[in-house]
Image (tube, rainbow, N blue to C red; front, side):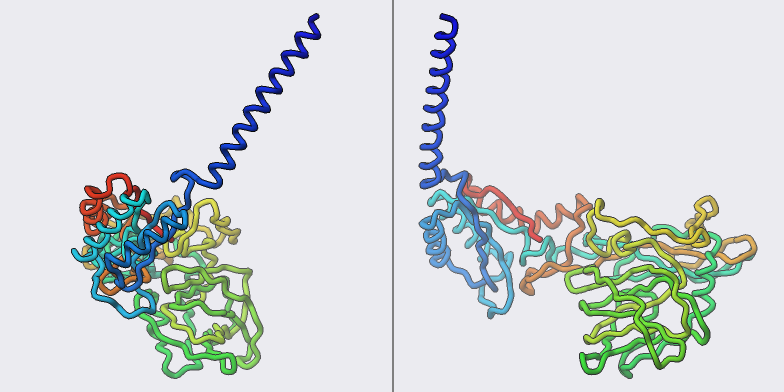
Length: 425
């Protein structure tokens, strides 16, 4: 009797489970054929160079709805198409976005928009340099210790006319830093128009072009006058290129040391900051088969931390992807207990008056400036500096200048459709 009851119970369970699965499968089939609004895909709605009208918007949205799309995200871009008469962030454009939102509401579509002109990423002409994305910059100098030090510290790079000091420190100079300071070598180029002072001044704000091609590579040559040991090189350029570091003992026959690993530091900027096993030679050269616009190029006996560009915020780098800083010789590790804070001894004009014990000292002046990055591909009216995403007040300026205006215009006529603001790339 007990086994019979168990069999009946199992049968009922199976019947109920089968019925549930059948019913659920039928629902899945129906929902697949006629998906609910929450399951429908959304697409980009690109308007190129302000070419938009109420009639065109309505026709586009009606076609989108017929195709089973659930909603759109509006982008204004300017790329390769003649400009129309609808200016970005003008009242005329807001009225058209209001119309798009209202039509989306009527058709049961969702509607959103990108937070600025272009698709990358969050900028505009309302963002000033102080509110823009920033990076850490520095200058350094090796000096002899003295009871009465008085010197002018070079101001680090200042982009967009903006610079603020952070700190001034000193520490016993590393032997490799002393070597760099005492033997800078002479620099020549294969291109007579290449401006060597701009490319080697330690600043990242001006640029000069090195002509090159597959048949006639371009070179920047460092002649140290005697065998010299190099452990790293740094470059910042306006374009990506295959850059090779080479060495030579006679200045005639060069052999490869390393192919540079490019890191994208901005919308149109690339950098190289690498260390490697020590290489000794009299001549070193940077070789490129592509015309390259340099902002800075330098070699060093020093062994800096790995991915310096990422660590000073010049290029994007997710924290978990940072490589180990490297394994330098102990002679190239700064003793943090011997670092001296000299910030209070520098005046607002960069003049330092202080005392340092006898010996060689490295003095570093740290500050920050704008990255100079702008939103792209944007119209002239919508292009401007990228806003500082870590600054609440700066982000509010950006929000109020465009996003809030669109929301204020569209939300009353599309309370259900207007659902999101997007930040791309």
